[in-house]
Image: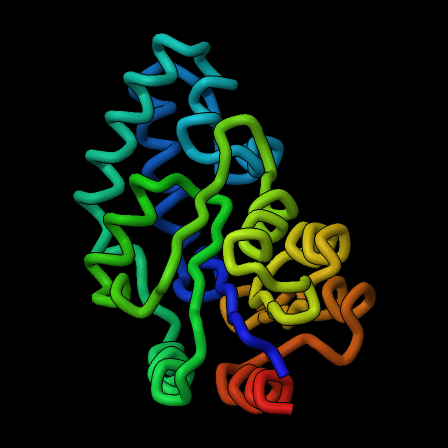
Length: 214
């Protein structure tokens, strides 16, 4: 039985990458940085402000991030969509008295914009955000356990990437991987997290509640 369900945002709670990529590339064009969508992969890990610091340095990076937030909010409703059916799982977790934690690699600023706009911010008991210095999910999962005075075995994480699996393994936290917003990632995820990859929200619901309640 799990006492806490921690959930990722990008690719899990929402299909968000179209908006992120559009906003980053629009800022890049304003700063005369030549970049295409495929070029952004090398920057993933830090929060968005960390990405712009890598690109432009601290001073220009801060200004670029402020501009990014404007663009992100402007195009939010057009480009970012909640995963269909995911609120059914959130509702059921709440109804059954489970603690739900938001744990992401993105910034606090864009998290708050999206969680408010999607109307799901109130589902979560605590919020753990990314770091401008790089991937910090292992650290945040460990902090989560400490904050709630729990063992890693009491927590399950839901995420969509290989990096999520690696972070959970290091933190000794179980993970259910999802591919419903990235259908081409199943084989990669299943090779390192076999039997724990969900291709649909219905499959996630079944696997999650089997784990949560047993």
